[in-house]
Amino acid sequence: MALDPALSASPGARRARVGLFGGSFDPVHVAHLALARCALEQLGLDRLLWLPAGRPWQKTGRGLASPEHRRAMVALMLAGEPRFAIDDSELERDGASYTIDTVRARQAAHPGEDLFLVIGQDQYERLHSWREWRELLQRVTLAVAARAGQEVRGSADVQKEPHSLLKLALPAMQVSSTQVRELASRGEDIRPLVGDAVAGYIAQHRLYSE
Image 1: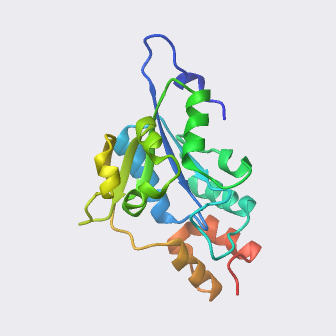
Image 2: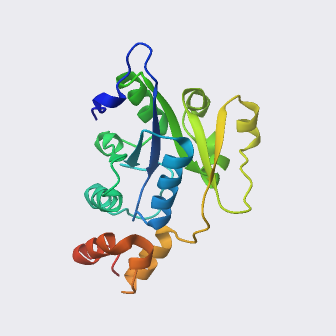
């Protein structure tokens, strides 16, 4: 993805602050959007890239909606915010989606950026299970979102490794993709959880129907 000229690095220029926000987004919902907006404002990002996963290696046991459907729903969700963009690199890559591959490729193509990896506390706790996680810690600043009252804390292995960590204050929202899929399968109203545009898309394509 080409970077806006205004964000391009030049001698003496401020480095662009770019967030990476990955997930299966099956489907994307309002809590994803709330986290993305928090990251924009609290991290002072120039841009936040949404990264729909092609084949999430940690999600097994059920079939995902197609990459085309998941990408389309993300596009509907982020419409209207010019600092949001979709990065298709994980959808286009063969094989499983690994964050370290995405970060390496992004830094090679855009060396004038500071990257912030936006994740939840549950992901932070499991970060030691990610591929090449020690290298990942050296390449990005982690921006970890925790729900109200939840402690931001990594595993013992991660805590031993030097890394940059910022906490994102996330509004309390009890929404999950699993919940949306279950409601959609019963034909219930999911608009409060995903918005009108995404709900309409799910209904039109009969996604998650029993």
